[in-house]
Image 1 (cartoon, rainbow, N blue to C red):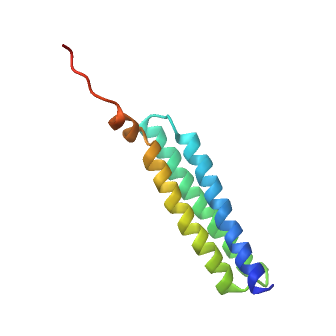
Image 2: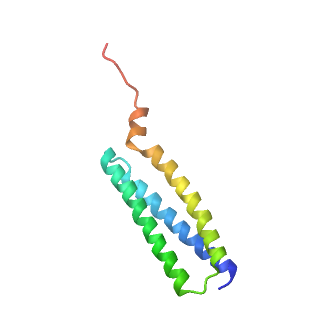
Length: 106
């Protein structure tokens, strides 16, 4: 496999991880804090384990160039995780509650 193909394969795996992360964040949106945390953290754990399994499978079963593959995966993985964290922080139940103005009875 060429270095460019290896890089693109890694980048596509990282992109798939990011897309599933955004979908998970959308599913968690609007839930109670406990349900939100379970969906967000459980989804992250599941996705990381799935990516690890796919990476191990690719490295063992294909003739991928390791450095470009890991480089492409690493770049998209880190950018995707940062985007997901920002999305989750903006949509978390606590963020929504802190934006609601508090009124006192007159």
